Image 1: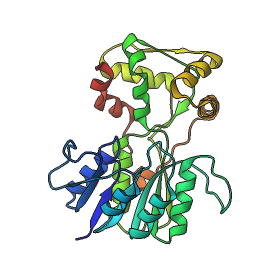
Image 2: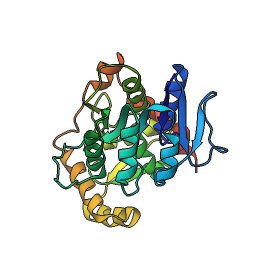
Image 3: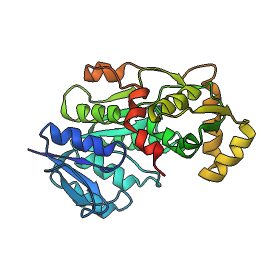
Amino acid sequence: MSGILVTGATGNVGRHVVSSLAEAGHEVRALVRDPARAVLPEGVEPVRGDLASFDTVEQALRGVDRVYLMWPGIPVDPRVVTTVAERAERVAYLSADVADLADGEPATIYHQEIERLIRKSGTRWTFVRAIDFATNTLAWAPQIRTGVVRLPYGKGARSVIHERDIADVAAHVLTTPGHDGAKYVITGPESIPQEELARTIGEAIGREVRWEDLPPEIAREQLTAAWGNPAFVEARLRAWESFTHTPERVTGTVEELLGRPARTFRSWARDHAADFLAG
């Protein structure tokens, strides 16, 4: 049996990809920085590697025919992406809800650059374009513990998705036919105002949590200091503002692919209640 290489194998999504594949009986190789410290399901082969190191990735690809690829927040190395795509018979790339780019058109986000490299490689590929992860709300944890979340645009409605649904879709497209060239936009089952997301987290941890709208100009200063990327902050603020009058879209792709509804944000909040209480 040929194997499946999972990158980001101990991350929020990757660890569930590993578990889903292993439980289904597939031969799984997990790309990790330190095999001795990696906690993996029984039978999963840990292999030392890092997407920032071309040589380690090249070695990890030996003996596998499929790859689950995610890209961390590091500069894109075309050699790594191209080698993954050329060595694998099939690649499932965890992307974002981005527009396709033509050859020569400049990318506005690294996902577009990686998608283009994979498309040009000639391999069989599927792009799993996930709307914002529900796990991003874990950044609210310090404020959740005070009972008040202070951020702009609480009325902005989001369709954030459970990381286990992302993983289940990725595992499905890697192991079943019919997904070559697909660009699946996956979301949660409903679009929920951010202030309601905060209240739902409060219910999950047994505390009252309210939302306080922060003026955008103050949020801009705070987020720029925290994230260090003014352009990204500006893009996020524009998106959040847009969701106050046009809710983030909802797709039925998870249910179409998996035969069951996408997990709700309420179920995600219950799954992560301890994470909000820790610290």
